[in-house]
Length: 365
Ligand SMILES: *Cc1c(COP(=O)(O)O)cnc(C)c1O
Picture (cartoon, protein in one colour):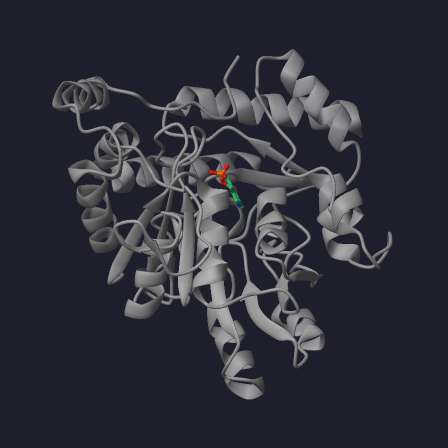
């Protein structure tokens, strides 16, 4: 079975963990600091703050820009549940806006309709590794209310670019995940980037109970610290980020060549102003998606639906929303299917996967 995702763990990672164990300095020590410095440099951001996972990274980011109970945050219904949960964790209301059919990212036209005096932040998602439409979102804010902040859910998009700028340096604050299946990983981990000194300071306190100086607390914070064991792994992974991204892009290009013209499916689109880091390579299957998925699984191709349910239909998020409210997101949930292109997938694997997709589609028709 060719898995949909698989962490790459080498001798460098093993040695790095052992060194930390031998050092006796396990939590938020020199390795966390080193990771923060290299990650900030990598993204072209002034600050990076390491935390315990991508969900706590989003919560930390939202609170840093001042999101609080009574505020609205506009986000996509077509994403992992953590995106919306982080808004609830900050005590704010989740306001959904539909996504663009081709890029799968939040549609600025729909966002504009949802902006009110209560809107405190936009939380676009760089889904599957493609940046959201930041130029349009920033233009909206200039037009409406400069007080609205943009938090990027960049959990899937480390290394991606929009208009020549790296994700992590575009939004007011950007949140990344280092979960085991992400493009670079450390098991569980997260990191937040910003160019704003005050936000960075808030985030460093927030992840450590709001502590100002030792045993003196400025506000309610949490234990969202990263361990040096995790940071040591992430440092080694980051060194490979560009090479792994190139391999993902190479596999994606080959897959698109091989699948071009197959009737009944739509291939991923990369707008001219963006680069795509292909956390997932996701096709749309106009009918019989689940049958194709079953065929692929049966024939050794690990494939997966990210995500089967739009978030506005989940019980804890559906307040006021109904089926039919976000037709694009709803349709995508029934059509998308991700197939493996990660760096451990060889060219032969790509050919094997493409052939299986074609065979499966023939049976579908
Ligand atoms: C992975 C992911 C998260 C959450 O990250 P965790 O590290 O699993 O908490 C949030 N949003 C998106 C889009 C993700 O892919």
